Image 1: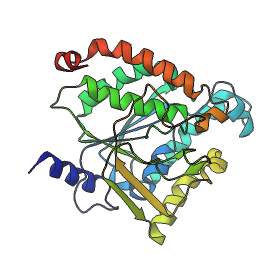
Image 2: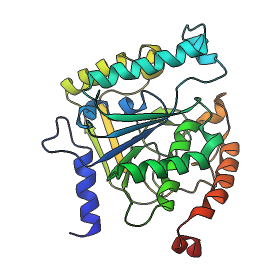
Image 3: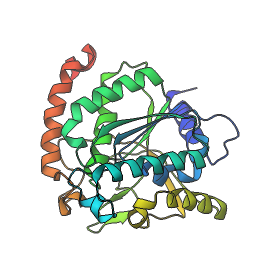
Length: 285
């Protein structure tokens, strides 16, 4: 079987409906916030009983604007509520036994730690040996989302050719069409494998029930479409420039950074990470 056919088979198996007739490929889920995994994979989340789930942030910005907005007197109460909501969702999806870890970066601060996050993802990939990694696209929707994309893509640059899982993305939100849109991708920079699924009434019900368990996020999650789930293999990204002509979506919000600042941090992190490239990559870069 050619590498392209093998990747197509892995892609197709990994995104299949639940319940999967056979075990899906070993999967690593790398998402920015508690609830991102359900936005991306809610209708098929029960398939991931053997996945390792990584949340980069704790979902609670330190400026306390979110915690106060959602009715929490203390930041720690909001952080704990978000963690407990995630436990409830994973239990409802049958994933109580799935392994998981939170990297405990405060919400909106992931871009301040790009090199360290990348090295951490390298460690996790070496430990877990996934065949696929589900994560965010680089689309300027949220700086923590873009930080996950950076860390996953650069982690694979630091790994040997024998450890190269397939990156699969799910859409969240962006403003590439000059207005905010949810649940759809920006056009990729090169051809990629793409699939979209119109959810059955039962899948919609199941996904809605899971999302409703994130009670503190009801207002935010109401903006995501329930009738479709979309996936694609990740294109190559140039993190040394914004994903599209500014302003990107988070340029319009006080979410910890701007697209110009993100690019500056990405360039600095790439310079640091280039020291750890395998010899063959370093000589070619």
